[in-house]
Amino acid sequence: MSVLITGALVVDGSGSPGFHADVAVDAGRIVAIGNDLPAAHRTIAADGLVLSPGFIDMHSHSDLQILVNPDHTAKVSQGVTLEVLGQDGLSFAPIDDPTRAVVRRQIAGWNGEPDDFDFSWSTVAGYLDRLDQGIACNAAYLVPQGTLRMMVVGTSNRPATGAELARMQQLLADGLREGAVGMSSGLTYTPGMFASTDELVALCEVLASYGGYYAPHQRSYGKGALEAYGEMVEVARRSGCALHLTHAVMNFGPNAGRGDELVAMIDKALASGVDVTTDTYPYLPGATTLAAILPSWTAEGGPDALLARLRDPSARERITYELEQVGSDGCHGCVVEWDTIEIGGVRNPALSGAVGRTVAALAQRTGKPAADVFFEILLADDLATSILQHVGHEENVRAIMRHPSHTGGSDGILVGGKPHPRSWGTFPRYLAHYVRELGVLDLADCVHHLTGRAARRLRLPDRGLVREGYTADLVLFDPAAVRDAATFPEPRRQAEGIPYVFVNGVPVIDDSHRTAAVPGRAIRRSPTPAPSERNLL
Image 1 (cartoon, one colour):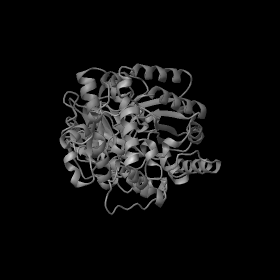
Image 2: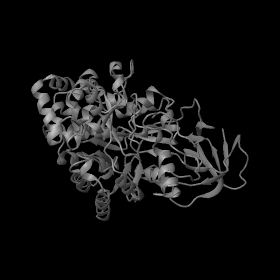
Image 3: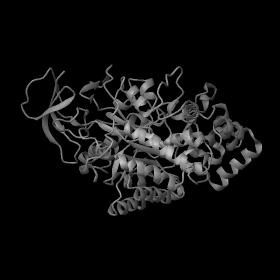
Image 4: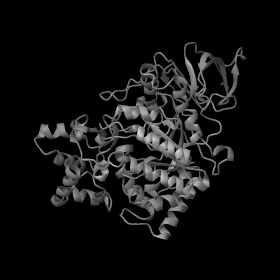
């Protein structure tokens, strides 16, 4: 069905100022931009509204939920028309049966543990084909380095052999040929964290040869964060690979006021020829699993071995000492502050009373040491607990989002009783809080961050801009009314002021209501870059 959108302020995703025009859509494409365009099957009068490209979520954890809950209202209602899955080094393709069993338990706090779910794929091609069966928005995929290592090396903390490294390189190359856009790492998560810098360089050399990019969750966002960012820049420099620093934050006490130091590092890397981009979410708290803050040695041998250690008094004593006195590598080298760890979601219904409470508050209520409460929750929930971590700094968030390398990524987790509100509110919060209310970004620049710039990182030739011939991934929003309604107490509230969202030319939000349409598909990366794509900034 053809659609004519009339009277909108077109903010086209390029960073240029907006202009008033009519936009015609037909057969999933933008077919005309101008004035006095021919009539269409449907006309939407958009006076007072902004028409922009659909927002691109560069860091999403919807890997299973996009299939389990095909309406995917959390994302499409905030204007997301494309999200990048396979993040933080742990996901579900490529994979074998033993690895899948471990990964499902390890990241149940991110993806849930859906009953009777059909894991009928083992390859990246199989997963992308599954997405093509019908999803709400488009999705691209990163090959997860931690899953590769688990398949080939296992969960032990040891160097990969030459043969093992060659096997991981082959699996990565297969995934890139099948359509993955790059590779992710989770270097505070096991077993990805056991990879050396040299191992990461060897994998990223494969990425470079296929034109993919590297999206690492590096070894620390707390104590030693700048050193960890520096390692990732060095990996990119040595391998020749494009680098995308995911959820690029400077969190925890040691990093207050140090966002400009990260910006200076990025500028220096860009000046030296390293291709670097970033994404952030516009909130202070982070989110992860409760088990993630454990010292890495506890996870060797897999989930069952970890649970056994949590039951062992001597191991618990050692863990408590590392968490509370030394600073666990899982807690980014920082001593844990139990009053910053809020339970976001549990799988065990018996633990539902813990949701929305900090570990410190639960300890005070029960009269137990906080570490004991921590161990009891992990054991009772079979490691599936998700958390919010209140460790961010506003001045750092603003400094990083202003940078020309910046894009938007929700890092959103959709499961749990009280997930982070960024899952429902990231993109409208940029437009409301950081554009309209604070003026940290102007409207055209912000839309560029969330659309055109992200599409360039993904090397998508026909998305991210309002241009004739481009795919009609489009959002209509009211610049005076758009806002994130999701809050920490009520994280699943739909954004306001976004009445229309089109995915591949099909309305998924129509007059602020979710339609039944699932027009999204897998976005497969062409395996080699065109010469004109090499300089992204």
